[in-house]
Image 1 (cartoon, rainbow, N blue to C red):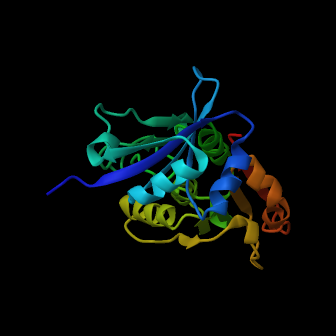
Image 2: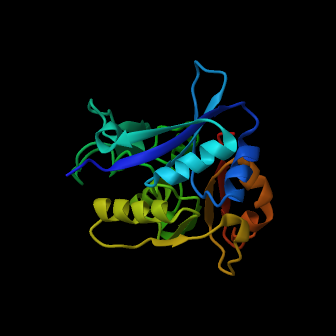
Length: 243
């Protein structure tokens, strides 16, 4: 049986143009993308991955860049990946299933296409914020742009009583739901596919997490702030953006 291929469209872009490129991709109904910034490079790599070659070729014809095929084996790490330690309260493990008896408390988040395995600076900082003192048993959480679900899963690990997590990408939502099953025996988090810019929930939350691009944060600021419950003693809106 032939190995299944994923097709990648890639091009280098200048820092500061990320939001404009996202709008261009959205204009051609492209809902998912990956931006990679490296300390040794002045430009940022923009990439879109799809099962269909035609999708990548169409992006190249419209926006330039390059197209390449990727075999499944190329996604798999060739060396063991060290856990990501978020202080003494949390550890993110990327390898085989971990024991629930590990110390510090840990989550198993395999590397994949969904954003949020804990190493990225914005995700790391938000996880650090979650390790601070809080009465989790009385806390309701809304995680916007959940990606792999790592922030919502950390909130569940710490004891949050009610968690809602959404993402624009349906594949990310499926991955996040799988990651919950990987870490917990029973489901608790309410996962959903939604656009944060169209957020219109009458339900407010004690803690709102928004690990999103700066342009989206600015565009949806009113909707996000409206999801925070100010009746709570310590309501929190925790946001972070890489750009």
